[in-house]
Length: 191
Image 1: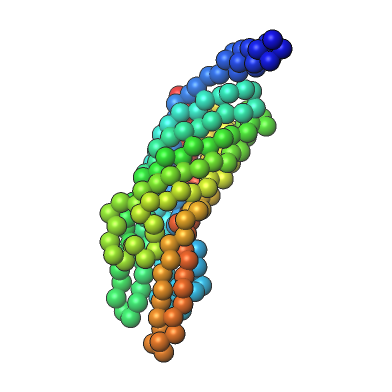
Image 2 (image 1 turned 45 degrees about the vertical axis):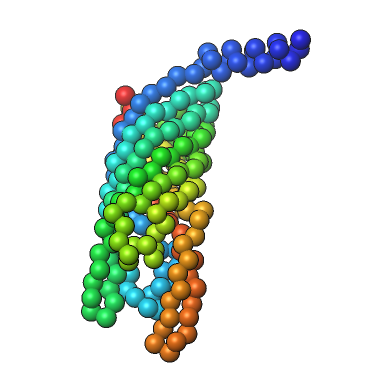
């Protein structure tokens, strides 16, 4: 009986504080190679700032805790220069982030979550560096100087490394384990 009462009170507490809000976001993204110093023994890698767009829903569970779910599109721009040939990695990532957010104040949110993703427009060169399917961890911070408009910064790192064996001119081979890894900075509009 006591368990039912406690569960009923907890359910009523959550239900009374549950609210949701839609949002859209856009900003810049910088993809990075996990093993760039090792890669640069073989190629020159020039990481370019690109963009992302997305949207989703925020659900406030209790006053200081929320859940953010959404979908994002990330454009990749990385140049690789090898023996005077330049190849462009211009793929894209579609991702479905889910972030548990802690809200210490109305102006500041921090969160941690997971993001399954798929890499599209993949060429043979890109397969060396990026996984087609990945599961990333997400760390995020948001500041809302205006109630409906905020600035968000996020860091994503893949859990599943892509393995690549490089051989130099002397026949020495090296195993590189590289994870999808990127930073993003953008604006978030809630409505």
